[in-house]
Structures are given as C-alpha cells and as structure tokens.
Amino acid sequence: MATRSESRGVSLMELLTVLALIAALMTLTGPTFAHLSERAQVRRAMDTFRDLFQFARTHAVYSAQPTTVCAIDGDGRCVKSWQGSKDIIVFVDKTKNRRLDSDDELLRSINWPTGDGNIRWRSALGRPYITFLQMGNTWQNGTLYYCPDNNDARYAGALVVNQGGRGYEPVDSNEDGIAENRYGDNLSCPL
Image (cartoon, rainbow, N blue to C red; front, top):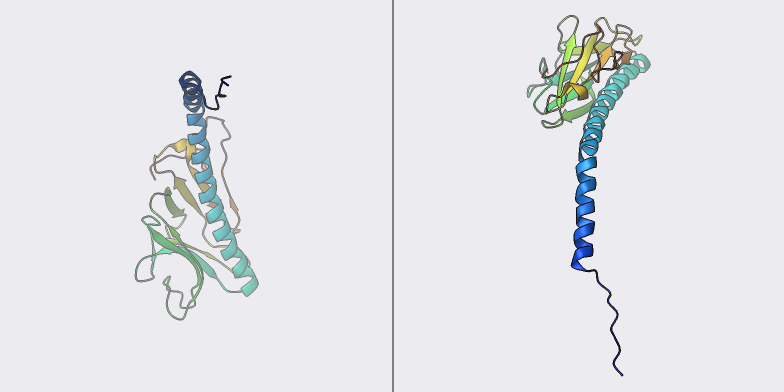
C-alpha cells in the first residue's frame, strides 16, 4: 500500500501572493518610515546640542568659572563655521582668547560628522561661540540651527539660547509643518 507524502512547503502561487502583499505594504508605509527617520535625526541633533549647552551652563554655575562652547579648527581656535566634521567643545577658557590652549580645561568634545545634517550657530553679537557665566547667564543670546542633508525645512530644528542661559526649541505655531524661529518666521534650509 502506497502512502502519500505530506507536503511541507508552499506553492509558487502562495509565495507570489505573500510577496505581492509585502510589496503593497512597503509602498504604503515607505514614506512613513522615511518621515520617522528624518524626525529621529532632528530629535537626536536637538537633544545633543541642548544637552551640550546645558552641561556648559551647569558647569559654569557649579564651578564658578565662565564656560565656553564653540567649534574649533585644527589650531584649537573657535571658528564661525560649525560644519564639516568639526569638533565642538565645551571648555574653561582661562586665557580668555577663545582658543583651546594647554592652560585651558577641556570638559567635553563632540564631533559633528558630515552627513548627519547641517548646523550653524548664530549669535546676536556675531560671535562664533557662547560663554556661560558664573550665574548661568550669558551676555549674548543666539540660535543653533539644524537642517537635514536633504534641506527639507519640515525637518529643520532650532535651539534658542536666551541671555538667561536657558534654551528652548521653537515650535510650529501656525501648523504649516515647519517650525518658526523666535521672530515667527519659518525655519528655512539650506543654512
């Protein structure tokens, strides 16, 4: 008596049906995943710099020493451009020359790599740095701007630091999908 072997695989038709369903779902959800990825990148950038500025402010208060944040060039000088794989540092500028010298105290350093979006620091006095004083305040205010590599302003971000040394992120108050700067104008890219 012959026994029939049980089939343990799937037919070609079943496989093609499953692949068609997966392709249809990917078509529908692909833009959503891209949107979530862009939002996550903005959030990471804003969190990184909010934490860096808060660290500098806290250090200035607890150590009673002015504490500076800036991007530096190869010679350790604070530079205007925070772009292009620059090291962004927090340091106690004991010599007050806006340069990381051997006498200064380096507290923290991050490298903002090319390809993680574009950043730019703009201060009211045109300074390429911000210094937090012993009371946590700063004699200058400024804004750190972020734009994604694709320059889509819907994913732009900003961190405003007021003279009290406190930072906040502007929101999309008119609900057009783009956050506004402190003057109520939409953030724009490129920087």
